[in-house]
Length: 235
Image 1 (cartoon, one colour):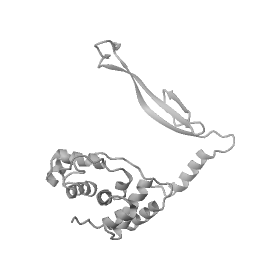
Image 2 (cartoon, rainbow, N blue to C red; image 1 turned 30 degrees about the vertical axis):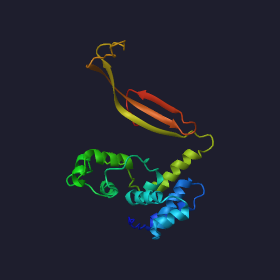
Image 3 (spheres, rainbow, N blue to C red; image 1 turned 90 degrees about the vertical axis):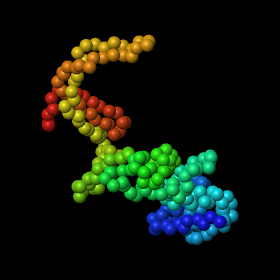
Image 4 (tube, one colour; image 1 turned 30 degrees about the horizontal axis):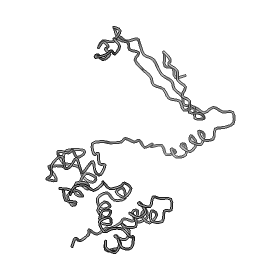
């Protein structure tokens, strides 16, 4: 008989799952998945969980494995539809997911398909399938910026409050500028697109100086106001 891996919850995970199990406005499938994980963390066998929640044992096992591999994020998305029997053991799939999320290869900033395949002893195609299945893209990075201003939160409330509730008879604009925009033009006119031929233009260009774009967003109606100036002045 297959022995299910134990589930140990952090305090944060326990609090989130408890909220989900009581959420009346949440999808029923998410509530049920949260109940499966909570009961599994209490040491209740999969057979008893399936009987209590009126689901099949494979369903219980599926969401136990998904939680072990992806934690809370794994419960939010539907599992891939069943197809042919996977050639990669679930234990190996979990190892690839955990390594992708919590480790980096030596001498590199993130895993590639080639390095992960070599480290796990599986094919590159297998790594690609696992990453696609779990929505993992280690080569992509989103940037963010944190303010070092000690009064940042105070200023944030002031600015946002001004946008949401401007003073009477006041116009609130969000203004920015883009300086040193090059005004370029081609040395020869191009030819338009035609049947059997794409449009053309010369590789060479000529400079017509620079300009500065000043743009403002009206917070009241969302209208964008813009104008270009030949010179940049601090006034």
